[in-house]
Image: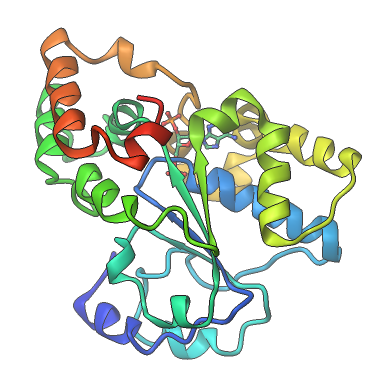
Length: 254
Ligand code: A3P
């Protein structure tokens, strides 16, 4: 999905101050936040957000950054890249960055897709996940890389589990961070449209054939149905080794 030509061309990408960047490791809920931000933009501008490119910044052909120069603001750019692999113009021009994290155990389970032809087994997938031999590399490398950058002025940390616990409060925080003023009623309406059930029901329309795979269960703690005791201990060890005592480690409420 990401060619070396596109990676090279990424350096030429010119961010704008009103770009909205959604940074996450895969399966941490980026489509959820993307939907919420679309709804927020619609609520404040009455413009349906139409984005003519695949929303992941680093995916697509190498000409896409030229085409993006002509897109209206605000542009929403999802990415799974490490902080220090992002194009410098994002920081120079002070684009707003929403960083989405999720417990690594549920992230691993969500990333495990038994219906694809190359699938072997959960145990094999777990082994690959722990070694970082999965799309976009290691969850833990991603987390270590972002850990130092979560408290910047233009960065807002969002935790999947917090959003599950109180969706309206999370949406309000995102709106405030983006400088959008919405009434309580508007926030409530967006909450109703952003539940897992509401998004899953529309997933064929919004995401086509991949919809049902993408909106799988939308739960916290599904890892308990798949992890063996040994796998649980292995991930706890890895978490300790990589994130214990860090600001992100505390934020993840692991
Ligand atoms: P599960 O596989 O655990 O169901 P991403 O969008 O980054 O690929 O993340 C996909 C995960 O986010 C999936 O998790 C998906 O169900 C979950 N998700 C998407 N929309 C959601 C929502 N409205 N509420 C809760 N979880 C949601």
